[in-house]
Image (tube, rainbow, N blue to C red):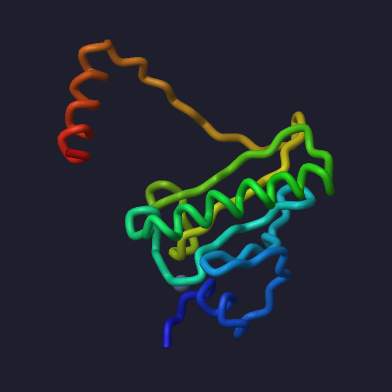
Length: 137
Ligand SMILES: [Zn+2]
């Protein structure tokens, strides 16, 4: 038996406030509610992070995120909405079952993301891009 909290939510063994589900996804209210209408969209079949995600799961998460974001916009009329998703402890992931935050945003709502840009020269960008392209081939 998995001790993954989100697997237990998907299985209904831990209560959640559900807003949407389909074959691959389950969306439920984030307990923290940074702003009203804060929803988590999780895959039903366990995948720890983006690195383990199947294409069908990724497609379903994208479809559900659009649909639910549009519903959140109508329901709560936020000024904006952040899509937040973390992979691995170093990235700030705390629940190791793939999920996306749909976070309604308002000006000066206290959410901050520190973004320490390095602005490397173009040659460095080309070198980084080449490393990635080699893995995509
Ligand atoms: Zn899980």
